Image (cartoon, rainbow, N blue to C red; front, side):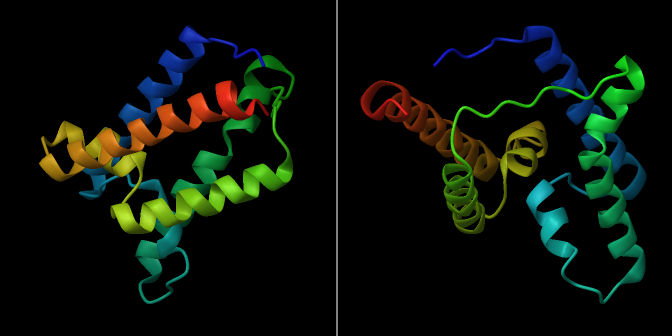
Length: 143
């Protein structure tokens, strides 16, 4: 399976995530932890907080529409694995987020930027697990 390396798109996406994290902290005093924001949509005790979370999630999901407006076509999204594997992977990530107390956006982007030792360790664990998973799936299992 070939992996397409897209340095400019990746750089642009990373810059936008960083900008979003800085703006959310500057304007609302909040950490951009995507799974925490998404999880908070299940609580309805603070309408203003819920609206902010909903706006952030809608903004994250609107990326393909922005691409459509900019280029006139929807982005091609190709997944080299089955839907079952995606669901299983999502469940595993959800479990990891629960045990790790956050996700890569909260720990990796915001936590490391704040020099949090806990976030540094969590991000190292995320990355080591990702490297090991890719190695196993690409070289040992070869799906």
